[in-house]
Length: 396
Image 1 (cartoon, rainbow, N blue to C red):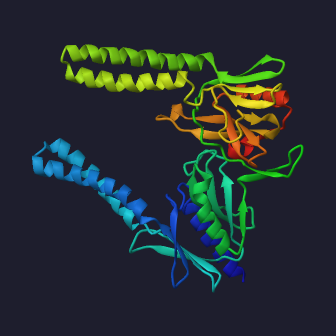
Image 2 (image 1 turned 60 degrees about the vertical axis):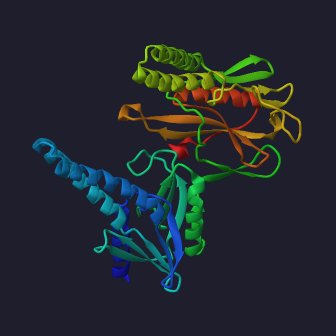
Image 3 (image 1 turned 45 degrees about the horizontal axis):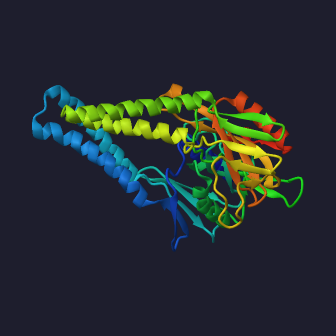
């Protein structure tokens, strides 16, 4: 019995080590009932496009020097470079990552390696639990705030096997629910928390960050208490200045493209028009509040939360959300990656949790200056007399 337990522990740790840096499934797997059991495998219609792009780049890099007589130095660079891409495409297609569940023997087989040399490990499922959680560390496998599906054992000292990582919790739910069914209900969703409002039934709230309309590594919004009964979340001066800069530069680009039209400068026309249009539209939409920068007003006298310029509801005829429908405020965090390592940062969110519909959230702020966001969140919670929930410990 002891030897079986030791073998089980070794196999588990082997799988956890192999998939520590990268999750087992890169994309959502397909679930296929077979005569041998229920099979989880990569979705080919999602995998093949990636492999095709790798193969096309690799083939082009190999064929070009052979067909067009490129000089020797370029040939020595392109052919190995192309070969790496072709090998990468083959490894994507031939990578064997499948999990087979056998309900009769209460076992699962986890496959890894490349065809036709793939290996597998058989594990009894009686003690295995599937867990849906919010990632807490910045690792190669997952960023803070991302949702993860993991297999774990009752022993907390044993590592977890990470199956799938995604920014969106909803995309992981079908896989999580099916795994929970196959593991006899041994499933724990740690992305939800139950809160008790000051009145009414308990509410389940997601601890995962919302998809932000606009996030920045600087303070782009702030809380302003104008009167005793009115508070406003509005863009900062720096945010407005940034959008004004885009607007002015875009306008200059469009003017230069018109000048190039009279000079018959074709490259200048296209360059000025394309770049100018992009800058102009970003600046215009930002100044108009279409990029998550439209002010949000909290009016205690009217008892409503209203977004500036919001139209009345077509069913009730009212504008905004009653302040009594706000159950709590929530702070979350998520990782924003830049083009370079120094551009990446942790962004903090302030969300409103509604009582109706239960657990629905509205994003108020999203930026990377933690101290300022926490200060604004505390002031707003005191202004509204609502609890402030800190879920950054779960998402960062």
